[in-house]
Length: 439
Ligand SMILES: Cc1cc2nc3c(=O)[nH]c(=O)nc-3n(C[C@H](O)[C@H](O)[C@H](O)COP(=O)(O)OP(=O)(O)OC[C@H]3O[C@@H](n4cnc5c(N)ncnc54)[C@H](O)[C@@H]3O)c2cc1C
Image (cartoon, rainbow, N blue to C red; front, side):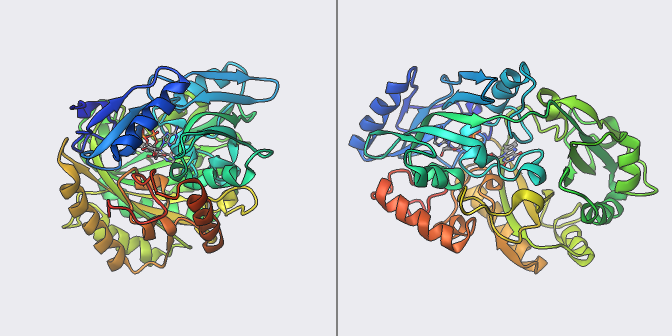
């Protein structure tokens, strides 16, 4: 059975699962999982396809995209979401009550795929990993049972799901906590190619001066020739600084002048906006595309580090082109061992490399690109603290890479819970804590 690769946001892989199940109601998940377990195949869940794990031969697909209801209880500030809900659905429903979810850059990303890996939101330095907003869950386990998971029932599983979630089952529905910050000041500042180095160094200095109210990232991007990209940088390399800020009123010009003094952006769209409009901050491509991504979490970065990043992963890199991104972490993003499994101590920045791939180019092309990313990380010589599961954007990781997303104590607790809930590693296809036949 063939699934059109365009139905995945990441269309780089060969999507030829043996079977496709499309649940229409909650019990259909159980029926689908039981049928898959009888064939001995690996279940793969799809919501939006932002995080496709790789080629899907020998897998059975459970497509949750039809089940995306969202109900908001404004009094308790809780949204109840089905397995296939996307962040845009939640932002719209919550926005009607002046509430926001702890979502990230793109409204098309699945709520649970994002939360179960930690979730680094637009205001992550203020609120920490979004996984903490997961309040309760109905989890379909490898034993085919639906487990209620909350602070009162199976609290250790709730802790594990908040960061290593795709290891333990399929989340059929969940309650998530909303917040009361209806507006955010945010937007992107675009700079032309000849300003990239000055902007990168200026952004680094600026991040050192910020309070947790501001979360930002720097993108060094070969921009496509798309009308969604401002004309001055369209079709060429440029720098894109994305900023989200709460609790203060400052004009875009004022932010730009502190960000990189003496350089005016070629374009910017910084303003006060509702959460529903906040996808403008990153301006992620709205249409499917092929890609593979790798990342490292780092401690503080120096200006020498910025120079090497520009040398090996900037516009003149012979190994590129890459979309190179540095996210400013720190703030509230430290691990909270009593609350969730996500997070690494001392992670101040995440350095990300993304290679665009042709549609359907498959795992071999992705693995070659990943090899290049790792060579570059080695050449940079930056001390690596670990990895972010979210920012791997799908792609099967080795068990060691997955392990590096967690503090050692959290990892050993997670492995105990994995042995108890999924002893045969049924949920092995995506960021599995234990080695699987995919490695
Ligand atoms: C354009 C873009 C923007 C992004 N922005 C951010 C960001 O701002 N911050 C951030 O932290 N990350 C971000 N991400 C990364 C994103 O969090 C991950 O790629 C995530 O895995 C996507 O989940 P999905 O459900 O949309 O994707 P899918 O490909 O549909 O699902 C990926 C995997 O998630 C797991 N999963 C999904 N739903 C469930 C469920 N109900 N139960 C159990 N497992 C489930 C499954 O293992 C599934 O195979 C972004 C990715 C892209 C491509």
